[in-house]
Image: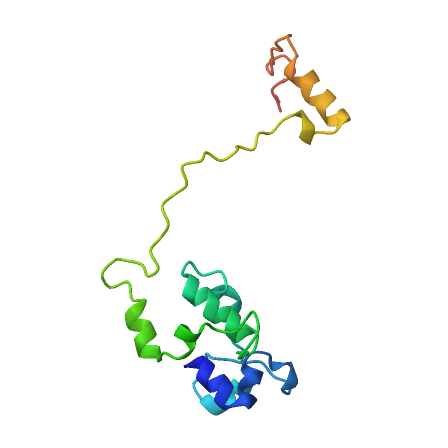
Length: 152
């Protein structure tokens, strides 16, 4: 739907980047719609949706963020661009607790673990850490010797 709107009504580009609009901030909490500066809103959610877990949502968000181009690397595949919003919703619904496309099985390869070692510490910090860790003398703290009660 958003793709069709952007392609049919090119002036909707200001929803993606509102720097061309006048001053004022969008205030959605206001009761009166004419005073909320709706013309100064932007589709900031698209930035977050570009990192969505579902690949189709990511693809659509990137496509819209780049102004819904009809060709190039950000253009939609033909199977996505020719379908209605209802068809997309039905095809990618998680109603049956399944994902379309299916989620890949986890990798069996063990990942390298990051270990903290001496390579992360500079020489002075490494020397101080070693000197603290090698203290063999146990210190006894006795606060009763230095504390004298007030007799006033």
